[in-house]
Image (tube, rainbow, N blue to C red):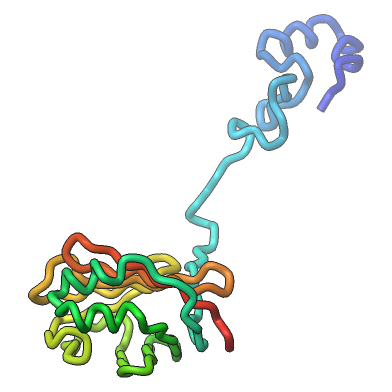
Length: 193
């Protein structure tokens, strides 16, 4: 690139040709000169070729661990949407469940552990299976669990509309959002090991 001083040291006809071509600061047809408004990272100077960039898939988090109950919100409303009787709803709302998750590749086991009853969910990611929710509300449903970004999402197709849940991590806290009909219950667990 020619500096401004060198441009004016060129013979007059050459200098006028360069100015007519808009290459006041020097350069060549292959490498045009930079104006003061350009920077080396300007989109007009950098050609972007996404076809040569490597594609790096986002790996979902490994949820393996043991989690202790911290808090919950709207468990009674969620259980009411599942037609659970009043006495059992009151009892369940008092429970403080723990979660144990074993995550090995595309296979997961989620154990919900309470002083009343334990519930074990054993499944392969992305494959539909019949889930027996007898310990919860006496129903069966067709269930699929898969990743949506960094959230583990479960869709349960059966008698109840909009039924399912999603797990995700925020630091050492495991969040669980359960839905049934128009009700949403949120639980938070702290990872202890």
